[in-house]
Image (cartoon, rainbow, N blue to C red; front, side, top):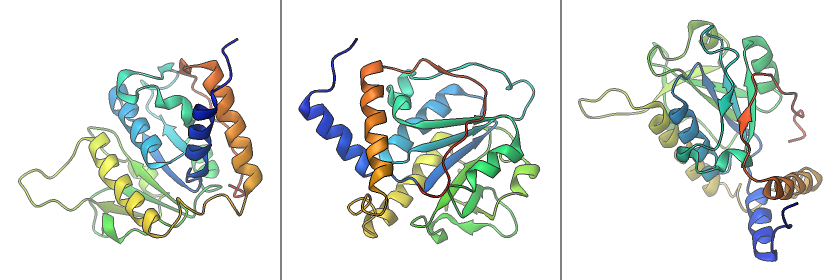
Length: 222
């Protein structure tokens, strides 16, 4: 059995846990390239997101056993709660237990600017696949859609880059609102439980894979 974390490591784990943003999340729909998913995981961890939803409804993507901890994520996947769904209804049912609004990246008639989204509120940002974007069926379940302002010849970004740009805007908003410095007082038991889970994950080492099943998650006590 691996040794427990050193005092310095335990202090680091506690600091990370206390800054986790439990009502802010990302959804990836039918993303094909595992390197993109892995890079998104790394960004989620970097900005303090705990929950990541992966929705795979395309037949050729279902029942794949995805590998976690690839080079792009640097092993950060083990610090995330990754929720895998093949059923759109089930995914959104659980998603709305964490957030009030879901915004998809999509250029449409009523699209808003990324910077108009209040990411200090319980919110999810949803990104579609590399080729077709967000499906019409999923767009219909979202509360709105947004675009990232661009002023060059390029009119689109790689999904992992678009996610990073969007999330670091959210980080800026949440830092300015003090959500990283006063994060645990309302629900200390939730963060204590997460800290215990992090210590277990430290001792277990890298998580190897995630199976294609939906995961029940707690409600809005998070």
